[in-house]
Length: 108
Image (cartoon, rainbow, N blue to C red; front, side, top):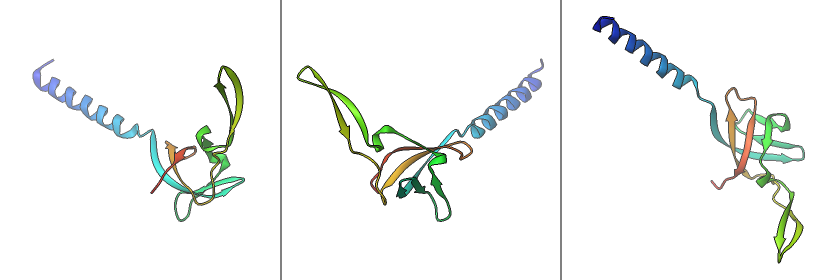
């Protein structure tokens, strides 16, 4: 291949790589406000409120049972860490906005 064709081919490859990186925006992070807890609803803008159909909630923002070992004995404890109305949460939004991961509480 002549040098000018190599340079042109290299430019095409660079453009393709740049476009691929720009289109590979897989996840965005945003802050939401819990507006209701049962069923869970989180407001992410003036007009958009997400319900449970769009949310995947991480264990650390739920009431759940945890096994611990204390003095060699395994015990079940209940962790009361469910979300409350008005709390701010960190959300990860999958590309396309169909699924939102409730990651943790935030202080803003």
